[in-house]
Image 1 (cartoon, each protein chain N blue to C red):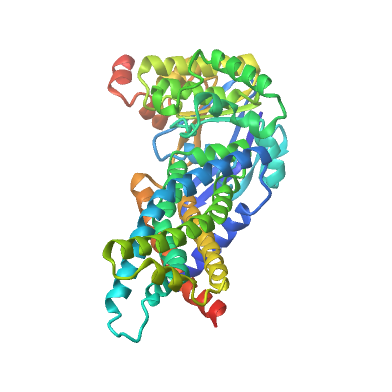
Image 2 (image 1 turned 180 degrees about the vertical axis):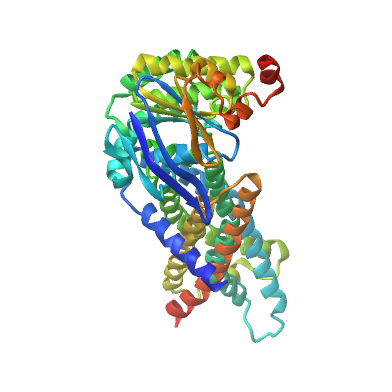
Length: 248
Length: 248
């Protein structure tokens, strides 16, 4: 479980996150949604420590992340996997080297053990015979799947996904969503997904937190989100032509 | 303006404190060091040799043409070429050329990794990204640049001899005798000390500008340009300081 308590973040005079209090539960896909510029990416980066919170605290299973030093964070980060918006695969490494990188860096496994693990996680994300390909030779969906494989190679307890569906067609986006959901349940991990894709919300949103203007505006799940009376959330959810017609 | 410069220097020092720490995994550092020696050094041999041969040739021809007094011996051509190449051309001008070639490569490589979130990916895994990315480049530059500069010295003097052979402005005997007149090994030591300082400047300044890039492709280009310009200015300043310290 991950908990944000009274989290505030400023960029100069701009108050980006305002007293965010939110719990992200284990074994569930916890979604953070909101318009572009609402602060959801900043919140995720505060949770993983890429940004320092200015006020407030972040807890990982009651361990105070905000007070940890570099070494303590380094240890905790081996329990974290993250899928970035643009996949963030290392350009100069092949698929196998990318997935093997955390194992090389932080384990004492033999080359054979590492290769077995790499093949296992690549198979888990439905990728086979791509070990020697370079990231530039992969499609967008394949890159995301390799990034997921790299993120889960160390058996993480926490998985963060920043806009996992951006730039993907609806069908491929659905495959990625399903994969994230399956991995969350299978490994019983705490997954936080940052998205503005309503398909993802409705298909994998075990819990949904709506961020509006830097504040936690609404919290619920994929069933309650369609029946809420919250105006700002309704504007967001039914903001597209398709969803507004469906509502009618 | 002054405050901006001081802030820059402060940021540079803070980054260097992160860079100069013990590598997290020796084997991976060794692999990266070999890659960097290849990328930053071996791949620069061609351009260094080409420029050195032609510069040595030009220095020799100009010297020979300007000797119009019968009281000045033709051995002066070899002596002047040797002194110009070893004292100034190879350590300083070739370092400026390397600032352009290697500096822009370092800044754009690290800058691209920054804007495509690859550096964030390293940080999330618990890797000290500054040390992982910049330290092998600094060590590689310190190891390979003196080799390139000594090669440049040889090629410059060789170029001068080839020019004399082709133009018949001075005989091989005069040229070789000129090279040997009053040779002091200290000038080679002086050139190598300067090269080490310049190698450090090129790799750390370029690494600094690449690492602090934010934005997109435009900013990567700007970071690359800044890295070359600032490295070149610092090299010119240090050239004066080191010459004053080492030769007087």
